[in-house]
Length: 47
Image 1: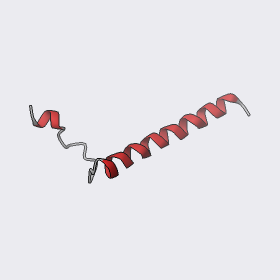
Image 2: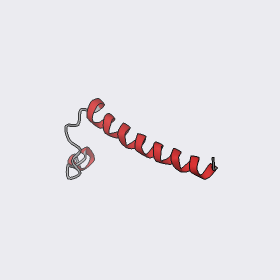
Image 3: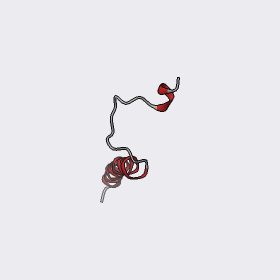
């Protein structure tokens, strides 16, 4: 198997895992109901 194929496959797997883990952390751990891009961050709210 070509090393480039392994590297590309690994990078794709890591990008998908990163995206799914980030969503899991936001929804389950931080109790965010919906990921809203328009919502202000606490730093901007308390300015």
